[in-house]
Image (tube, rainbow, N blue to C red; front, side, top):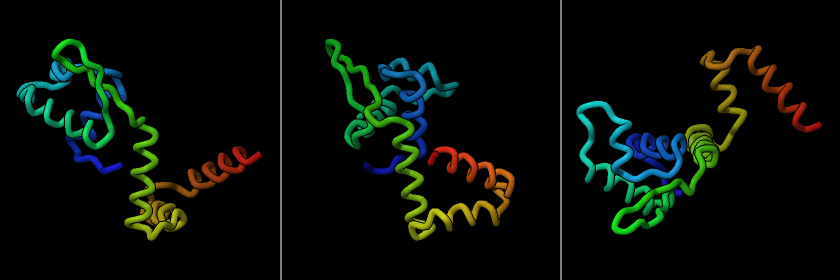
Length: 120
C-alpha cells in the first residue's frame, strides 16, 4: 500500500466518515473557493489506482467507496513511522513521547494497565 499526500488523506477522510460518494457530492464538503470537479476526480482516480478506493458504475458516472479502512491505514502509517524514524523500535517511539512530554507518566501507566488487562 502506497502512502498518501495530505490532500489524498483529506479526501479519504470523507469516504471513511460518509461512506460511498460521487465526486460531485464531495464538492459540498468544501468552502469557497471550492476545488474544481476535475481536480477532485483526478485525485479520486489516483486513490483508486493506489488501491484505496473502488467504484460502482451507474450509467456514465461512478460512485466511489473505500476499500482500505481508516483503522488499517492508521496501523500501517504508524508502523511506517516507527520503522522509518525509530529503527522498528516501539519502545523507542514510546520513550520519545515520554521524553517530549507528549504522553505523561500517568498516561503511560494507564496504557500498561490496559495492555495487561487485554492479555488476561
